[in-house]
Amino acid sequence: MRLSDLQKKDVINVNDGKKIGVIIDVSISQDGNMTSLIVDGGGFFSKFSNHSELEIGWSQVKKIGEDVILVSLDL
Image (tube, rainbow, N blue to C red; front, side, top):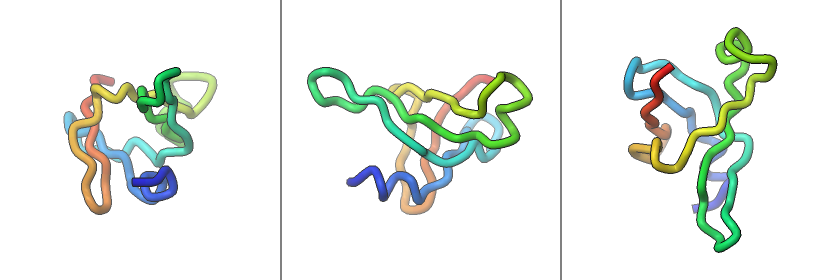
């Protein structure tokens, strides 16, 4: 799977069913493993911080589907 494929999917929080945003980037470790997704949360997360980007650890990703990425976040 390519980054461009991931960027087409909505990121959804399984804990409340809300759309978090879309992937704008990923973090990769020195050994080449993906460690987190960088999500642009738009207006939703701007209420909680000075910027709208949210870093979601790879361990929080529960499922990558055809149209969405399901993550587990406690917000």
